[in-house]
Amino acid sequence: MNELLTVLLPAAEGGGWSLAQLVGFCGTLGGMLWPFFRSRTGMLLVQLVPCLCFALHFAMVGSPTAAALNGLAALQVVAALAIGGRPAFRIAYLLILPVIAAVMALTWSGLPSAFAAAGMALISLARYQTQVARFRGTMLVALPCWFVHNSLVGSVPAMISDVTGIVVNGWMLLRGTGSAASSTLMTTPMAPPTPIPSASGEGKLP
Image (cartoon, rainbow, N blue to C red; front, top):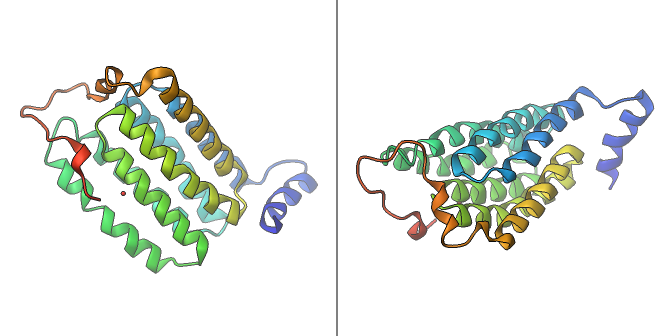
C-alpha cells in the first residue's frame, strides 16, 4: 500500500500523471485491447505495445527485472509469431526460456523479481501454444503473477492491464471462444510447409 501511495500522491500533487505513469497507461491500452482479438496472430501483434511500453515504464519506476523481462518479451512475441509458418522457430523460441532465469538472477530485487519471472515464464508457455483456448487458459494463470509483482512495485497502469486481461480472457473462454471448434482459429496467415507437432505436449513457461 505504501508503494502504491508513492505513485499516486506525486501525480495528484502535480496535477497530472508522471511521464512514467503516462508511458505505463499506453501499455495498459494495449494490454486492455489484445484479449479482444480472436486470432493468435492478432493477439500477439497487439501485445507488442504493452511489452515495449512496460519495459520503459518499469525501468522508470525502478523495477529492473520487469523492465528487462518486458524487453525480452517483445523479442519473444516476434519469435512466437513465426511459430505457425516455420517450425524451426520453436527451437529458437524455447532457447529464450533459460534467459528468464538469468535475467532474474542479474536483476534480483526480492519478491517482485520472483513474481515477474514466474509471470514471464507462464506467458512464455502461453505464447508457445498454437491453439486459442490453451493460449488464453495459460494467460489466466500468468497474469495473476504479474498482478502481484505490479502491486508490490505500485504500478497502477500495469495492475489495470492485468485485471482487464484476466476478466476478458476468462469471459472469452466462458462464452465459447475456447471450444474445440474455435480453438483452430490460431493458425497464422501462412500455412507451414510440413505439419507442426502439437504444442500441448510441451514439458515446460513473454
